[in-house]
Amino acid sequence: MKTLRIVLAGLAAFLLALAALVWFMPASLALPLMQSRLHGLQFEHVSGTIWQGHADQVSTAGGPSLGSVAWTLSHRALIGDIRLGLDLRQPQLQLHGQMHRLSPTQDEWRDVTLHVDMALLALQPWLHGQPQGQLDVHIAQAQLQGNWPMQVEATGHWSQAAIHTVQGTFPLGVLSLNVSGQSGVLQATLNDDRTGPLQTAGRLSFSPLGWDLSMDLKPHRSDPAFLHWLHTLGTPTPDGSVRLRYRGGLTQLNAPTGNP
Image 1 (spheres, rainbow, N blue to C red):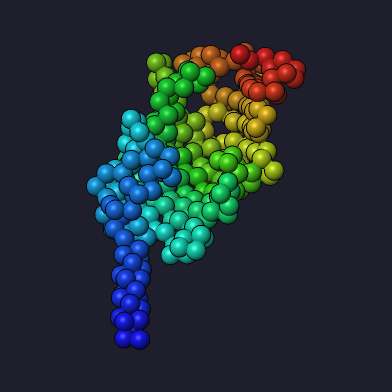
Image 2 (cartoon, rainbow, N blue to C red):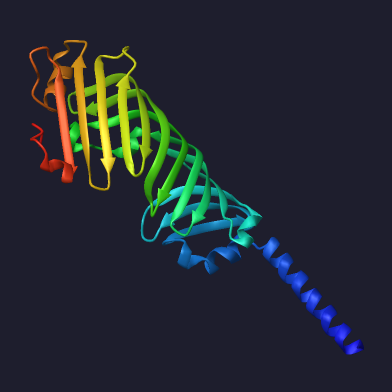
């Protein structure tokens, strides 16, 4: 009996030590053990624990730095209920949100805020210029199935919107974005606040089968350089508006769009 008590006491001490190690496991030790699940992400200068940690730099394999990242992971992950809080920061992009793993192929994101310096997008050939300004997006809820958004509720504002071209920089005012999605089909609208030089009304449908973008642009000013840039996007109608239509995937099998 004495020997059994010694064995049980030793086993209990080992289990307590193991539980303490897991509970306070350093992130610098845990992340290498999870490398196969990190999809090629690499972390540098890691501090904290696996439950609440920080990395000064995170990047994809061979890719550029995505910025610094801080996270909180619920201890319920020990029983398979993964709940993750994420905060990613770099000078031109910040992202904060909460993720809940519903199944091996389903993730739910809630209360996600995204701040993007639009200059991060660089030159966009279809715009014949580089977007500028600040895009602020709030995703109230998004459910992903295999990384595809099945359900989405999101709003956004593109403040100090502008396009930088070789002819100059043209302000567009403030644009508002609304996105909703059900059963894997996303619908988005983009509209101006009627204070800028360009009346904007855009619609986008997006699904695994393809995408369909239509946009009406009507100038409120007659600046020659501004009109020249606008007319590079498409042929103006009699009232000066430019109507754009772009399609991809199976949707391009429908009627001709009038745009390349």
